[in-house]
Amino acid sequence: MYDLANTIFSMNILSRYFKPWVVEDLGKDGLYYDIPYAASMLVAGLLMPALGALSDQSAKKKLFLLFFTVSCCLALGIIPLLPLSLFIIMVVLFAASNFFYEGGMVFYNALLYSVAEGTHARLISGFGVAMGYFGAMVGLILVAPFADGIVFGIDVIGEGSAGVFLPTAIIFFILALPTFIWVKEKEWKRTKKKKSIKDAYRDVWEGIIETRKYPGVMRFLIADYFFEDSVATVILNIGVFSSIVLGLEGGSIDAFLITSTVSAMIGSLILGRLAKGFNLKSMMTSIIWGWIVVLILFIFIQNLYLIYVLGSITGILMGGLWTVSRPLLAEMVPLQELGRFFGLYALSGRAAAILGPIIWGTIVYVFSPERSAGIWLAGALSIPEEGRARLPYQLAIAALVIIMMIGLYIFRKVPKVGHRVETIDE
Image (cartoon, rainbow, N blue to C red; front, top):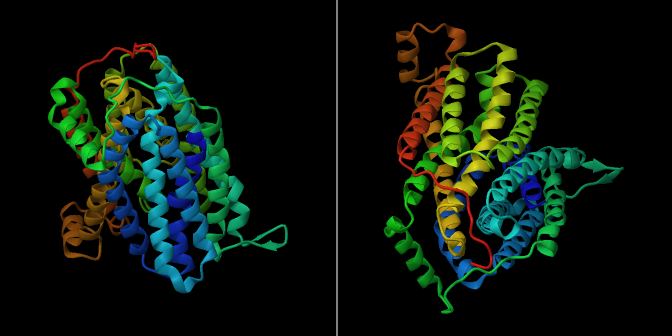
C-alpha cells in the first residue's frame, strides 16, 4: 500500500503536472522545476545515509517514515493555498515535498525484512513495485477531474494544473495509513549507545571504508549509480523523447506510457516470483543487458508496433530493476544495518538523478540542429532534414547505453549471495 501511495505522488507531481504547471500554466522557465528538483535530490542524498543509520540505532524506522510522509503531504498541500505572488515559496515547498518523498523511501525499503523473511522478501519486493505502478495509473485517474479546475460544479483549489496538488497529497496520506497502522517493525540486535547525527555520519563513513566486511556492497552501490543514472534520465525525458524521436502525439503518448506502466506492473509481479528461485545477481545482469539492447533499438526503430513492444519491454525491465535491487542489497548486509545501507543506496540513486539529466541536456543542447556541432554531425552522417531534430536525442540515448555498460562492467564482480536466512530470533 505504501508503494501504491507514494508512486501517486511521483507520477502526478514529478512526472505529470508540476513542470507543465510551471512552464505552460504560469509561463515560467523550466529551470524553476529542474533546479529545485536537483537540489532536493542532492540534499536527500547527503542526509539520508546518516538518518538511515540513526533509524537503525533507534529501531523507529516506521516513526521516521511517518514524519517524512506527513511532511511531504503538508508541503505539497500548502502550495495551491498560496497566492501566485509567492511563487518562489511554492517552488521551495515543491523541493521540500520531493525531499521528504525521497527520504521516506530509505525507511520504507529498510522495513522489508520486518514483513517478510528469506526468499519471500524477494516476492514482496516485486509485489510492492507492481502496486506502485498500479498506483501510478490510479493516481492519474483520481486527480484528472481536478486538473480541469471544476469538480461537480465546484471550483478546485489551485490555478490550472495546481488543482491536483492538494488531492494528490490527501490521497497519498490516506493510502499510506495502513503501513503505519498494521506493519510491525522488528527489532534487530543493535548497540545500546545513543548516537548523534555526527556519530551517524561516522558510521556511514566507516561503513564505506570497511566494505571488506560486506563483500560486494560498495561495488553494487557504484554499479547501481550508473544503472539509476540511465533509468532516472529515461523517466524524466520519456515524454519529449516519445514526441520528437518516436513521433508519437497526444493520445498516442498516453497510450504508450500506460502500456509501459501496465507491463511494469505485471513484470514486477512475475520477476518477484521468479526471484524466489533464481540468483539475484544473475537476474540483475540479465535485466541490465535487456536495458542495453532496448535502448539501442530505440535509437533506430521507427515502426509504431515495434515501438509499443519496446515500451512494454522497457516497463518490465524498469520494474524488474527495482524489484531485484532492493533484496539484492539487503542480502549482502546485516539486518540491523539495513537503514544505513539503504541510506547509501538512496545516495547512489539521488546522485544519479542529478548527473544523468545534465548529461542528457548537454548532449541535446550541443547537438541540436540549430547549433554548429549538430549541423556538422548531421552533414557528416548525411542525415536528411526531417531526421535532424531526432539526432541529438538519439545521441543522448547512446550515452545512456554507454553508462549502462560501465555499470554492468563494475557489477560483474559483485559476489553471488544466497537468500536471507536470518530471523528475528537471531
